[in-house]
Length: 225
Image (cartoon, rainbow, N blue to C red):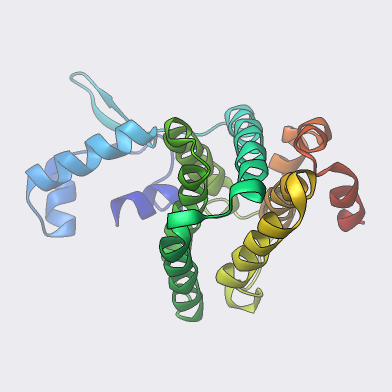
């Protein structure tokens, strides 16, 4: 709930948060709120300042672009590895995440779709044998969502989309079948498509070179025309 308020900018950057007020609004203890704020601080969504309380942070366009470039580099390596190794023991867990996306999308639950989207990409990273990169990828995806979901530049009806589960299932099938270069290209195109759909300014800030390096340049540009 509190993460959603920050992620979807119902609590805009600069908002001061107090444990007492949040506990009263959410109907829980201050200890529970304190733990939630500590988790949000670890994710970079809030900043706890000595003697000044807790403040909702801003993800600047430059920071978001840098995080997307990091995400592209990580996910290109993930895709290449999975094209060789497959999902292995992670297959059941990944399929459960995809099924959860279908359910959340059909219910119009954008928040749950966001959570499962990040969990899916982190699960692929772990399945690819890159566990140390999972927290980095998770944070990059989270702050990208502050732009794609929390500051929508191109208004659209969420439930008219093909479906989060459908899109990620198609992505996974391509990653597993296309070979290393095709897998990396599919992953880059996936990220580019999301930015083109929801946050064109962030897409432009990331720059074509980053997508080219990750393997998704030429087809991405063609898709935009």
